[in-house]
Length: 341
Ligand SMILES: Cc1cc2nc3c(=O)[nH]c(=O)nc-3n(C[C@H](O)[C@H](O)[C@H](O)COP(=O)(O)OP(=O)(O)OC[C@H]3O[C@@H](n4cnc5c(N)ncnc54)[C@H](O)[C@@H]3O)c2cc1C
Image (cartoon, rainbow, N blue to C red):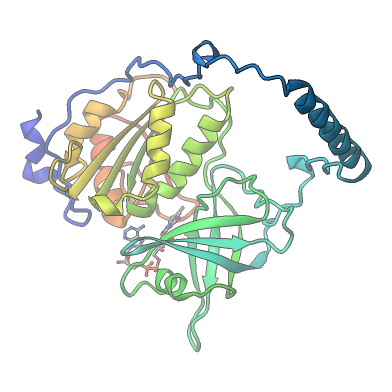
C-alpha cells in the first residue's frame, strides 16, 4: 500500500483520478491459457445394432449425392488476399454510410460505417487515425480525429467508439446520427508507425477515449506472432462504466498474461473495486512502468488536456510533440522515450 499516493501536489483535478493502492507489479510468469479437449476415452462405446449395414448404405448414398452436388455447382470463391483488396482511405474525403449503432454506456456508442465496396478494407497503417468532418449550418466545419476500434484489415466496414461530451460539436453530432446517414472521413492521419519489435516494452497511459489509439497499437502487436513486445497499460476513468473496450482489454490480459498488464484507476470506484482509486500519480507510474534507464522502451500518452498536462505536457501541434514535462519528466524519462498521440 502506498500512502504517499495521496500527496496533494500529485492531484490532477481535470481528470479526477486518485489512487489508493498499487503494489509493485511485474509481468507474472503465468501459464498461457490451455484449451481443454474432450477425452474420447471417456465416451461410451457405440451400441451394436443389426441395422448398421442399412445405415452405412444410406449414408454412403447421401455422401455420394452431396459430393456430386458440391463438385458440379458450389465451388467456394477463393478469398481475396489482403494486399489485393481495395483500400478506402487514400488521403481523400470519403462519405461513409452509418449502418449500425450500439449503445455501450450512458455516454458512449459504437458506430459501424459501411464501405460502398464490401471487399474493401480501411487500409489504415498502425498507428494512425481518421479525421471526421461535420459542418453545422452557417458555421465553420468541425474536424476531429478518431481511431477505429475495428481491425484495419476487416473487409466491408469500420467501427468507431465515441464518447459524447456535452457541448462538444463533433461527438454530439455523431451521437445524434441515425442509420443510413453519412459521415465524411479522411485518412490516414499517421501517428506512430509501428513495426514488430520496434521496442522491447511499451507503456500506454490513457484517459477516457484516449484508449482507442492505445488499443489499436496493442491489437496490432498481439495479433502478430512475430512481435514479442511487452505492453503495460495504465487506464484512468471516472467510473467503471466509463472503461471503454473493457472486454477486449480483458481478453488480451487473459490471453497474454506474460506480455500484457493493465492497471485501471477509477475516480468513483464501485464497492469491492480492486484496482486503483483516484488520480494517476507519480508513485503509481514509478511502480508499474519500466525504469527510464531500461533500453528500448517507449511511453505513449493519450487523453484529455488535464492528463497531458500532468503526465507529459501537451503537444504544440500535430507535428510538434512539444517539450516533455510533468510526471514522466520528473521520473527521469527523456523526450525521445515518450510519444503523445
Ligand atoms: C489521436 C486521437 C484519437 C482519438 N480517438 C477518439 C475515439 O476513438 N473516440 C472518441 O470518442 N474520441 C477520440 N478522440 C477525441 C476526439 O477527437 C474529440 O476530441 C472528442 O470526440 C470531442 O470532440 P467534440 O467536438 O465533441 O468536443 P470538443 O469541443 O473538442 O471538446 C468538448 C469538451 O470535451 C473535452 N474533451 C475533448 N476531448 C476529450 C477527451 N478525449 N477526453 C476528455 N475530455 C475531452 C474538451 O476539453 C472540452 O472541454 C481522439 C483524439 C485524438 C487526438
